[in-house]
Each structure stands twice: as C-alpha cells, then as structure tokens.
Image 1 (cartoon, one colour):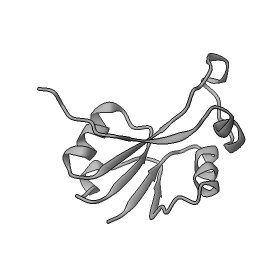
Image 2: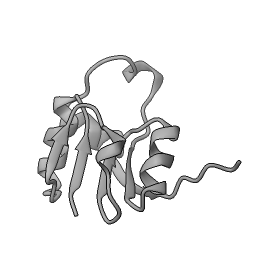
Image 3: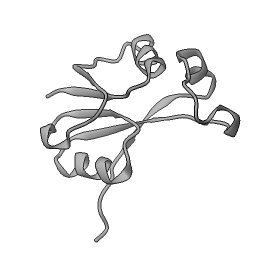
Image 4: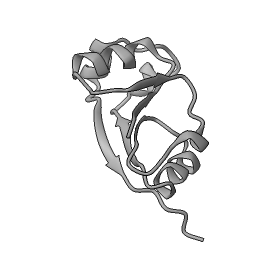
Length: 97
C-alpha cells in the first residue's frame, strides 16, 4: 500500500509537510495504471481519474479549499492554502453508467 500525493504546486507540498501526512510518493502526474487496491491518492484529480482510482480499490482524498475568484490562476503558498480552508475530503467516485 502506497500513499501518493499528486501535485505540481510547491505550496501544496509544503502544506502536506505541515500536516505531517504520511506520503510515500509525491508525483506531478498520476499514472492510474500504477494504482492498486489499498493505495491512497491525495490531490485534486479530474473526476474521471478519481473514478478510476476508486474503481481500482484505492481511496481518494481530495484536497479541497474555498478559493475566492481573486486567488485563482496563480500559485498559492502553504499559508494561503491554510487561509482558504485547505482540507482533505474522502471521496468515493463511481461512474453512473
């Protein structure tokens, strides 16, 4: 079992360190084919990828935050992530049809 943290953002990686998350691998891009049952994937994946992660029997923890329009489109540091309520939300994504 491996915990993957998927992000290309230094602020998110710093935030994860502050939270003392037990991450086995930090990756900039997730190859879903490498995910196995029992793995944990943390990040902000597109919904179709999150669904594939869940279909493989892994857990998906979404890095959620309340981002105001003025903060979109730029790099956020760990302090800003905290200010915008960054948290991990356990998601179960399943294709409906």
